Length: 538
Image 1: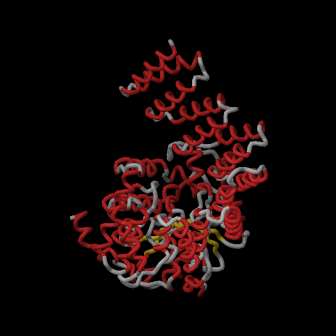
Image 2: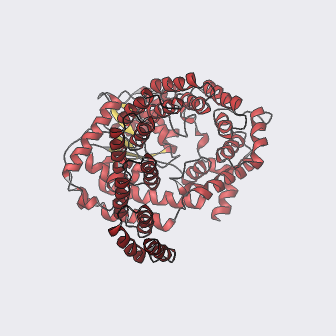
Image 3: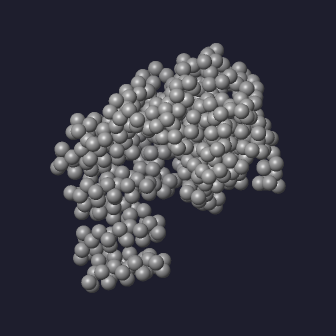
């Protein structure tokens, strides 16, 4: 009873935002009762409010230690850590120890596999998923689905992805998610007919599946208002809160040049996303860019030297032509496109959770280790025969760190009329990590920050950073691509101008656009929505 009263005192202090006092009270409780789970979870919440994230990780470690034999509790802690973006090392170790003690627990092995995958340990994750299958786990189709996602999204192995999706359907023929992901696979390789068939199959099984209806529309080419699919979308839209459906209907009207009918659906989609996305705070993002610029200067970068392999990082903003440029380079015999690698975002999240804080303590041993790990990734993706391209857009935040680790790296920044970028972002769902994408004003703000940071990187890196104009790329491709290849130290290849004919896999929102020859149609697209820009910016 005394402990309960003391914990309640801590809760009341926390409610009144006296978090330091609450922490002090809870420390007293935990000194006598280190296994008091309730007190430790409240401690975690208070420490988060105080932004004492290192201490939060200590408390999560203690929770894991006391829950070492309880799979449900380990899983609860793991979910919290993943959702909050904390390193998963402790979670993974807890699962490892659990399955070591309980080797015949298929659920334990499955959870271990899942979090290995979330930590980027894909090969180990695959090994444990296979072990869960061997143990006879219930609902094996879910394991096959997860395996397919690893092969498709992270390892670039479409054959294995398809194998596991077909294995899932062999056991459960009406498994909608497997049909849906077969549609994703078809879309990535540009097979419009098969993609449509897969999404139609989803709708045959679940007629009200609005996600499948939206993806069917994305894979469809609308040519007139009498299109039956347009009618299906329009019928569902009025009462729907499905973001993808509204984006799809907006894009359908856009294709039909019915811009005033498209706009309300783009607005509705973004309004719905803004309700659930983390709030975009302009001042917070300004402060982040200022801190990066202050921390990553010429003196800091001069501490690191030497050589490395020579990957190319395409760091343009979303919808600025980065996928197009990646595919042009991929058509060249000297490059292999790796899509959007998680290597550096994951490295930063794990080692610099308060980035750029911590860079001042970066040691040469770590740089050497990470350089070798990235070289191994490149070897795996290219077979050591070509240079790897990585078009992960948020790498623009980490350019100086990447250059410190990989002195041989080159950076290409695609740039485009900000208004065309803004309308393209506003009409595309980018996800919760891009909170700025739901308002034109916030998109413009983030674009300005992107440009400011790129200007800083260019001042540091000189010729190692190359800016490419989307408009020049479309209007004068031979000259623009030739300039880029020359600055990258590569010979000209005519294949670069026939990029749309290659059978490459594309996993971004530009999946259909980059399979078409270069056209100026996307230049000044914003003028179709000029009056809405006037409303937003005056």
